[in-house]
Length: 457
Image 1: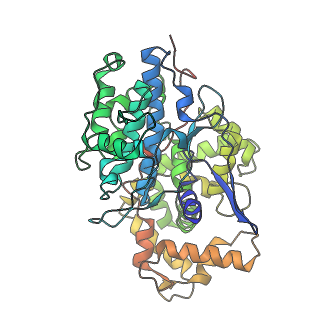
Image 2 (image 1 turned 180 degrees about the horizontal axis):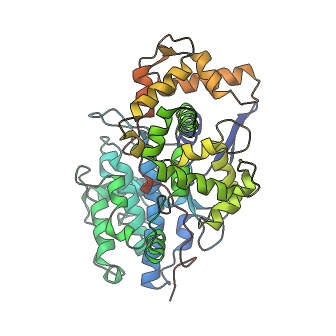
Image 3 (image 1 turned 180 degrees about the vertical axis):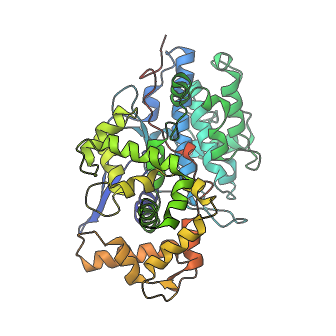
């Protein structure tokens, strides 16, 4: 359970995962308080009686959700190891309900490059060949997603025990290792070539030839049938945010607390008008910053220069995003680095600014150095626990010393590469580097599509 809690805390700020509110234990049990998902499991929404086009479009939408979770795990050094329909739940009973991943009890850390995992675990029918052979990495999750896609499109599993009435794991393993993938018999004759190509690629027995999860997300079958793609094509979006607001909020929310707090500090300095050198970088990205300031003002209907929960929920829907009240609260909690239950303009811009673009400016290293010097109050050349605490709790009401100490320790661990309990300039700069693998495609955009659901006819 400790492992499951740690994984959910690592990726749980994403709207693709069932949210973990809290974990506690009594004398007998460990209790996990999680988001309620009342819409049933993944397979509950696919009927072989639906029209072929509708079933395939819906399957593509669902598989994309599954792969997003895999990409989010892999980009944070985690392997899911139990991708199957039972572990993906619909949030509500609505036709257009989001799909959310749960049950990370078998998830684990990915090994360093050049090393492999050997523990055989998961559900037999969804195991990759290399898992059976105890020699695998992140590509095993991609195979499992391929099995899910096959099942959604055909109504059956690709590899089964054809001998025993009650499936035998050994015979299932033999089928996975030896049998050909059937893409010919009904209903495959009615499935598009793009969908069959997608399944064929994901169920390649050679993990080196199999696409990584991020590449699989870009396969034409998924990009051409997603609701987001249809909405963008219809709306002809061409703004600085381009329908990415909720995706950017999720990406920021999944960063560590220290990084979020430092980016908020830099954003605050960017918005300052007190010094000429601050204006230099502000002017370099003036259009983006002005766009974000205008969006913040639109959400701030009370005009108090703060965005509270109700304003965020209503505002996101008004500008074209489908986010529930609970999810808005989840996002607000991650953006609110000051812990006051409100989002100020610094927190908002820190979350939505394209930091990868900012990194490309010649002035950015000076801003990293400036932020470091602001935090290094004793000019020791290192940021220690006390200085981290001043940043994290400067506007916080948290008074429990043990809680504060645990939070500070976790923050230092984010950046402390050499393990000396302090953060030097190189470690600080490394912390703030944008992760090129953490792209927006892996997050659910939650754009409200032109039609709330696919046409079944």
